[in-house]
Image 1 (cartoon, rainbow, N blue to C red):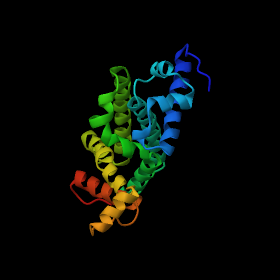
Image 2: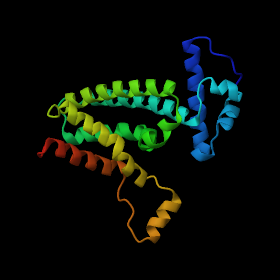
Image 3: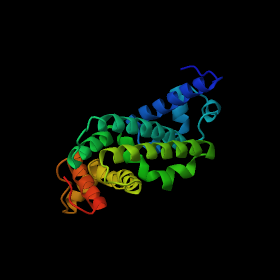
Image 4: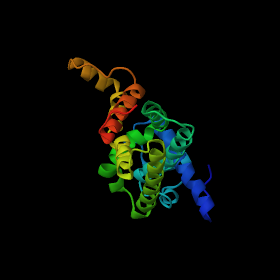
Length: 217
């Protein structure tokens, strides 16, 4: 890939997409702590100065990737909830989890945003990320309320936070390394049962029932 300076917003977005794609490919082959800006630049055939015109750290690249994933996740959730004409809570949870597993990077990275990633990015990158996130949050809340009208806006927002704060812990239980699994085995504690999808649906149903404070179908 030959570097050419972006001369307009469209070209700049193309460079950003090239950078995020290269980072995703690197993460398929290397642990994140082994990835450096130098390796990212080499994969892109960008000099360090060229790369730094677009991102100042690898965490800024992660922020851009999560921002892209958030948009696609919200769109997928919206499209898949629309056909639910007379939805049950069970049907809603199934659609929700199907969308969640399609974008595992959100479950993996979101818990690290505030404590790690956002502390290593520029304000220039963080502001558009926050704007995009809050815009998506409002759209997803509307989709939730349309399908589960007993929930109000505040409850719908809590459900989104449950997805971003609680489900990631469950997700990691089902995606532990071989060393972690062996340690659990040696400690004499049983590993997680069933699949992440099955357990996630159960957890979401329990949580929504708690929001309603009553049993619903």
